Structures are given as C-alpha cells and as structure tokens.
Image 1 (cartoon, one colour):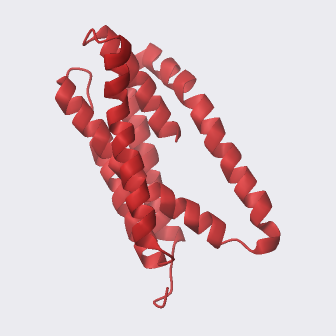
Image 2: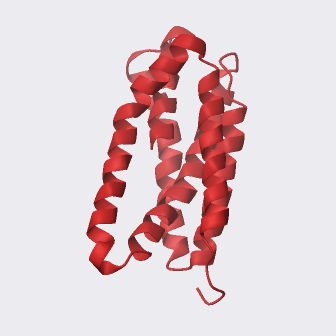
Length: 171
C-alpha cells in the first residue's frame, strides 16, 4: 500500500503542476488506477481460492507487472501513458495483495494468528500514512528516483515470493 499511496501522491502533484488539472477532474483521474487495483483484487481473490500454487504465481506476476510499469514512468510522459502505466501497476498490486493477505492469514498457526495479522495490518496502515511524506521527501531531492525505488521494492517482493513460498504439489 505504501507503493500505491506514494504514487497517487506524486500523480496528484503532477496533475496539478504539469498537466494543470484540478478539482473533481483530478479526483476522477486519480480514481482510474484505484479502479483497476480494486477490480483486479476482487477477481484475484475469487480465482485463487486456497490454491497456494496460484497465489505464488499471482504474487510473482503482480509484482513483476508493478515493477515493469513503474520503471517506465517518467514526468515527461503524456497523461494517457502515465495513467496507463499506473493502472497497470494497480493491476499488479491487485493481483498480489489478496494472495499476500491469504498467505499471511492461512499460513499462521491459530495461536499466533491474532498477533501476526495485527502486526501486518499495522504495517499496512504505517505504509499508507508514510507513503505521501516519504514520496514528498524523495521528490524534493530528485523526483524521478521515486519510481525506481518503488520498482526496486516490487522486485524485492518477487524475490521474497519466489524464495519464501514453496507450496506442495497438492495445494
């Protein structure tokens, strides 16, 4: 979620500064990547069920799509291309997020589930709260670096999913 809110914060400032879009039109444009994320998240959750093989694939594909999309974001791109790339990143996040949620809640013993899920939820909210200020700090020094930082974070998710999720053939 840190990725999403950091990107939306940056997109909001780009829409005003570079494309001179304000008011409700800006809100509608910001909703486009969120629409793709929410729709994909819903469909992804429906498709995975309890199949850990699918979860692993969806996490890998989602993180790869997010990484690739964010690498190509630049401040000098057209508005349509920017929204397309960010919507593509939203699709990637939407593919991975339900799988990560399911793995965390299903993969923990019942005695520890409350502690782990509360820690996980807390970290998600910290990400939502920290995304815009961290993005603002990165933009202050060099705004183009933010997408590379976010792409690197997505790449780390790919590596962690590949190394850490080893479902059995029966799941």
